[in-house]
Length: 154
Image (tube, rainbow, N blue to C red; front, side, top):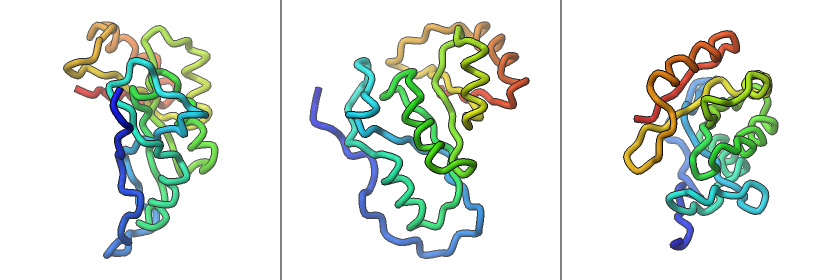
């Protein structure tokens, strides 16, 4: 695998406008630190660690109060990196998990309880898709009682 790729600007410039209270970043990722949250062996590249602390500092500098962190295939189906960030900023940072259609109802309920508000499936060129469209449609019925949504990356 090649050298780690920097996926964010470590020293962003300050915002030139003042964002309104409650401003929300609606889709970000956190990566690592890899010694605590290992990257999936099947990942397409290795990022430079971009942990929750870097995200929190960037949001503070930009005036962003809330955020949705979306788990990425770089961490595979291990959602703990997102869960860790949500725990550090309860109620302000929520998540979208990566799961498989055979995830247990108990795990879906646990994810919803800790702050995940949706799940994500990938249908992108180069990714091996295991779910059929029929399975995905059927799966959505399990999300509704939990107040969760589905995100498809097409």
